Image (cartoon, rainbow, N blue to C red; front, side, top):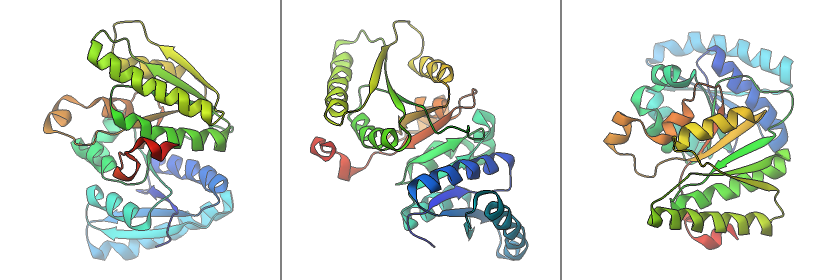
Length: 273
């Protein structure tokens, strides 16, 4: 298992192919390799699956000039992604899905928990990549302290792609929540200014859902990537009602979403200096 490769969850589906296409672009920019992870239920399936994966390897070599590493793991998809991704310290994890319907089919109601269990950022893919690199980074800000942890990745992707950052803020009347949002905004503005990052702030003045407004905005931006923080401690209620993150991840507009998980080693403000 190669350390710090880009990990692509692979099930021979069309959207898995899209994820691989995105991975090929990221791999060239990051100067890293690609590992394909296929999960089997029984050991006896390995021989047949491995034979099919050799075809995928050949096709990937021919199309992208990259020879992917193949990982076959027995177990469940729920545990395999987290275990393999964390063990190899994956640079990124790319997962293909068909929006809400596909997300439920692929990982059931535990989709968000699988993503949140990964130490590496997970990019959820629904469509093939554009010819141009990512042009717009969609950066919604709410009241949670963990929002600051997106700044490191926003800076990294901004420099990688030259993408413009769009900071989105909800309309909020609760004074306590508004105070926390403004604190996160001031910190983000200071961080972006200190690092010479071009950004734009949009405040939604409608009374609609912040999630819906974020998705609508991202759809209008050509070739965008939505950046979200996953919930640190996901409750049963989140699964029943649908956490905001899952609504964005499973959007019906085909938007790619980068899911960044809270990390204790980046929890202090000075970690972003």
